[in-house]
Amino acid sequence: DAKTTQPTSMDCAEGRAANLPCNHSTISGNEYVYWYRQIHSQGPQYIIHGLKNNETNEMASLIITEDRKSSTLILPHATLRDTAVYYCIVRVAWSNDYKLSFGAGTTVTVRA
Amino acid sequence: EPEVTQTPSHQVTQMGQEVILRCVPISNHLYFYWYRQILGQKVEFLVSFYNNEISEKSEIFDDQFSVERPDGSNFTLKIRSTKLEDSAMYFCASSGGQGHGELFFGEGSRLTVL
Image 1 (cartoon, rainbow over the protein chains, first blue to last red):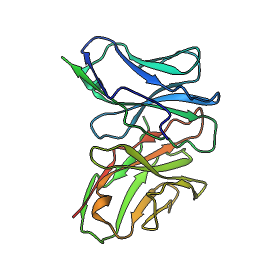
Image 2: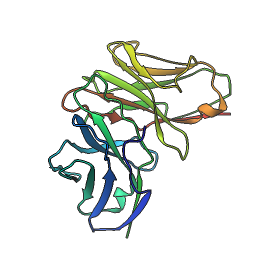
Image 3: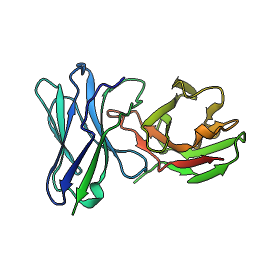
Image 4: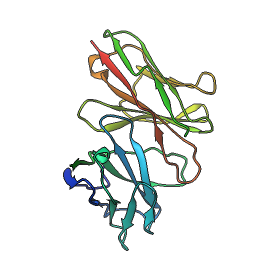
């Protein structure tokens, strides 16, 4: 039931921006794009979500293409603490079920 | 900041024993979930719970598993007769249902079955 495709891994230099791509070419009109991350077997942590407009919060920015078939999560100034597995998930919002289905995600390693 | 808390953080048990994992969701949340993650594998959905009943469960959640919300604050996962393959991290999550339903996860309970 994989609706998203992400690279398996990527490295990033500390202090630089990390750009994490996600492909969701079969996304439906009522599905949002959510990003979560998991730091070393801790519980997954919500980062950001969006429908079609670009979104920014204190953690990251989310850029969604106009056709909504792909998106990019941007960590503007990566730190060593951002080393984690990042999950891109598409899901209907405003439903009676907020279940998330996790894929393998992208393992991001931030290097000093 | 409100958080989901789970106990115990680590439990070691013998195969065939019953285990109860406990979770205290965020206080005004309405939707509750259990997930598990076997070492090195994906985070897998087990069950969702709303309005005092199971709303959805996965194939993993067989008759050996049960959930309940006994007192309006705790949310528990019981495994009746543990197997070696039940060894995993178990994550509880909750959602308020407001906004777009972000899930908030606890730090997990590591279950080791010997």
